[in-house]
Length: 260
Image 1 (cartoon, one colour):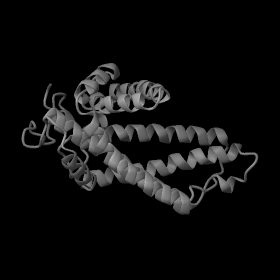
Image 2: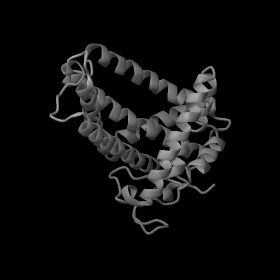
Image 3: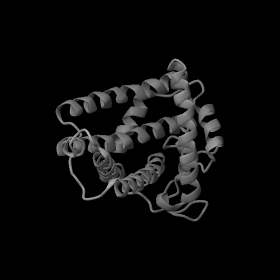
């Protein structure tokens, strides 16, 4: 099945603007605000050549270590929420985020998500060092790894193979589908950075808001591409009612996935 870029983009925008999508974007917004605040305060606490006010929009009464710990916790919560976003965007549920998305096999999914992020990050970085194009090729081939890890319950390494197989023959269309919105995001982020630096409250808030919406949209776009390539269109999905799954949890995202 060929990837329809227009349909994927339209679906991603629609899913982002649903009640579930906006709820998740709002949660991302809060967590990214906190993560950024703690990390910038950690940098400000250790700064010796610039005033703290030039590094962070708000100064917290904590030292470097406390800010680092709080920043790490916030980052882990962002990762955890990302897992929930992936499940939500692949599913058919748009009016809420089922509780099962937060809990079903969360330990293995979270662990393999971290492993996959590290391994894929290393491979893609090596690819970019090798004249950029190999890095792009690897990134596109491994774009669906998070979905296979948290939705299909695969290990990081099995998910890498599954993602690679799914993307084979579709990399150019996948590149275009991702590149167009990425350019728009980059331009908007650049404009905000010029006129409202991160060290200002307005810049800090707007950057976090833009990043939150982008995070949900990107996962919605990858989910739309995934569903197209798997042939899991809305009309052919197994019924996703949010009432049950193979583990007995309500709203399992796996109910939307056609078995390979």
